View 1 (tube, rainbow, N blue to C red):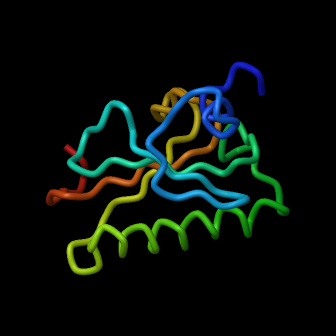
View 2 (cartoon, helix red, strand yellow):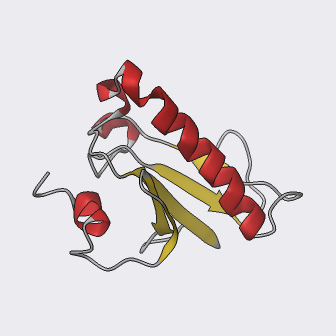
View 3 (spheres, one colour):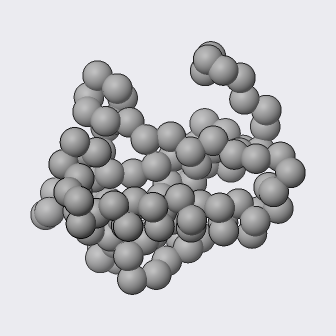
Length: 114
């Protein structure tokens, strides 16, 4: 997608502080963090929302979770944990229409969020 900021990051048209990258997934530091550790995990494949996922994307989305666990270990978060969140559509807070997961860590969180 030509106007997608995340596709531009994947294509190296916009710089990002990348913490993980392989053929399918990229993870980078959020430029407007809301936690001491705030990363974004995205599939390199452009998928606008979770509602647009196809059966063929199941392994890709599962891989994002595995990569998040690996990165958590890289950040020594095995004992403290992290929060992995995705928003779907505007009313849920999705601002960039490319499936992405927010990875929050580095402080205690409460439920419900507040």
